[in-house]
Length: 512
Ligand SMILES: Cc1cc2nc3c(=O)[nH]c(=O)nc-3n(C[C@H](O)[C@H](O)[C@H](O)COP(=O)(O)OP(=O)(O)OC[C@H]3O[C@@H](n4cnc5c(N)ncnc54)[C@H](O)[C@@H]3O)c2cc1C
Image 1 (cartoon, rainbow, N blue to C red):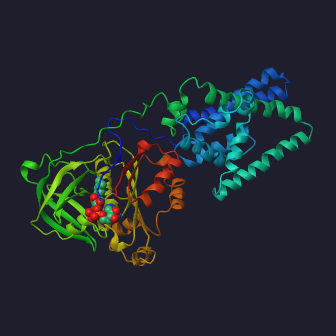
Image 2: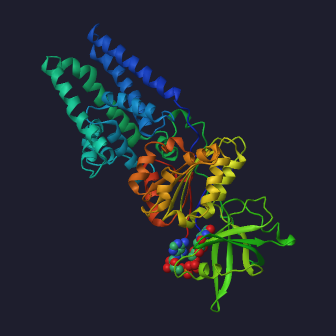
């Protein structure tokens, strides 16, 4: 097996694709209010003043285009960091834009397009088919969205129920209005401007594409339209991987501490002349080399000391049948270990005035590179917050459990840890649920900053978190270091929820 690291990240100079949103984006709300005023005014001109169609329909159409923009912002959670603001604006805007469907369903179909299409995420209905059909397609794009949603299997029950309710309710209201003899008014005020607005938006966005808006929007999907000029593009070239010089140097083992029955922390002293070469950033790793059965074996291990400490430390967990990890568990004080200087870009640039919310997902020994980054983020910027989702088989199996509890106390709520225990009989689950007497208020508080949940971090749980406490709009950076069975569903869910790649930092422990 070869151990290798593949890291996604940004250099400190790169623009942040997610710049924090205010609770409510005022220009979007103002656009919503303005559009309602124009819509109401045009309706009054039409129904009370009996102005001709050519005078009122353009006003209604402009209002619906503006309401479409608000709906689109809300679908991307770009109308503010508060979830309810987006949900409310989206739900209020939907009936003006289309009588066929609910806001969550429209959001799902649109975000699916972002994930699976070209960078411009064009709507296929708007771009394919004989030329003569195109204007009709543009004007009926909402029907395509509804059909697309209804042909998607296994969507959440609440979302489907809302979609079906809207599909029944709004057309019934329209039929009732027609039934009371107001079909013409309905057509002039509602149906015609709505079709014209949809045709205009579809034509402009998917056909004409005058401004490169799509590409900009694909780069910054979580940002409101009013910021597209202000925020520089995140698409600068990938930073080169931080490569370490290839040479190995002997380091002396000065400490071996058992962390669990299957993992040790090994402390390595660095001689004076090597100190500069072995200076590291939190999140970087060493490549250690051993000759096992006459063969050279190189493996990477995250440095879990803090940069100020004079010695280096790595935590090595036994992998069943693993060559290096088995060897490392037998290391003794005074042994010499060959190490290559620190390398890796699984780091998080932090600045003292940061106020970021970082969510870290770690499983098993994946906590190795994650913990130093988390501690650094909390240590260097007093307004940073971290939520750690930490998956282990059981409490006995959990690396750095005490250190984490101690950190939750030290950072007084800025670090919250959700422990997932895949062994649901794990006694530490019962223990954590409650009966334990606390020695101090600090201990009691720290327990409340840590929660213990039976079972793993399955896709359903990830989605539930992403739709509530960890909604992408409330999170600035994601750190991920876990085996593929945990990491892949998390990455898929993040992509599904529109989190840009640049905000997700992944450390892979490759297996072969
Ligand atoms: C950047 C980076 C940082 C790392 N940091 C740490 C760390 O801090 N602590 C730590 O314990 N490990 C860490 N690893 C993993 C480590 O490098 C080794 O891959 C791991 O110790 C197994 O090596 P081995 O020689 O014992 O197993 P091998 O002899 O290489 O493999 C034996 C068997 O185990 C499987 N296997 C290999 N690696 C893993 C794994 N990680 N989990 C489960 N099964 C595996 C293999 O597919 C193979 O079937 C890191 C890896 C990378 C790339």
